[in-house]
Amino acid sequence: MKFRKFFMLSAFLTIFSLSCGVTPEEYEGEPNICAILTTDSFAQVMVGRTAAINDTVRVKIIIDTSWDIEDEDTIYYVDTITVPLWNGVSGAEVSLKHGEESFSLTEDSTGYYSDSIQSSPGQTWELEVIYPTGEEISAQTTIPGSFEITGFQTDTVSNTDTLAWSKSSDAAGYLVKAFVWVSLEDEDADTVYIDSAFTYPELLPGDSYSIPLEELDLWGDSLWFWVAALDTNAYDYRYYGEDHWDPDIRVEDYMHIEGAWGVFGSQTVVQSKSYVLSEL
Image 1 (cartoon, rainbow, N blue to C red):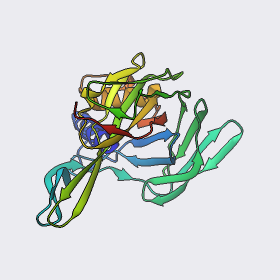
Image 2: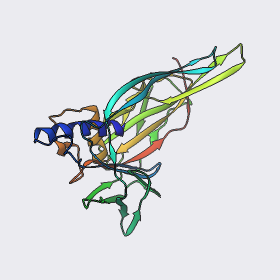
Image 3: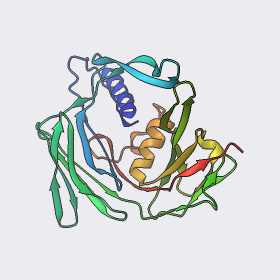
């Protein structure tokens, strides 16, 4: 999802630059950073620049899949779109700081920097990026506090149930999705095929602590739930920059990195146990 936001911002910046009399050939791009620290994964920071309007690439995206049991194969439904390129920057100095500790991230590939450090709920982290051309960018995030999913009374759930969770301190909002499995049996071949996927994520404001399961569009045989508490940076960036994109929205409404486009935010993630999905 974050790539889509980069594409949108790149296109907007290009239009803005052209309105100021800058041609595509003259446009060098602005610092563009994307990093969401998450408690269930290692740290990764994308460092790049916004792209000019004439830098585009054709991208194939899978919009759906299904199983062909007779041919024992997966059918991919693919669409092709043209999007502006995000220009990764190599050779930047990227560091994350927590208290007295400082970690220098390693460049894995052009524009992608990572470290095996693990963040925890309630911690405050600072990001510092020095571009090879001299720009110095800094930002800060406080990871939302610990919380938990309040489980169901049985090991079986249905679309008539409601998923709930406790409050996370410093959370500006919550992102909710489910990971579902479905089994498809081929009686002739005496084989069972398993397919799985995440449901489309639902973004909720910070004073919402539940969601009816019917809003998650559940399907399949079994599932588990994934809930992330988002800090203000991550929530605003997703809310304004993606779910409510509008060229008239002010940059300061969703960009919290001075001197750069993008986001430096954080999220605390909790995951439920697995449940059987009933068709009731």
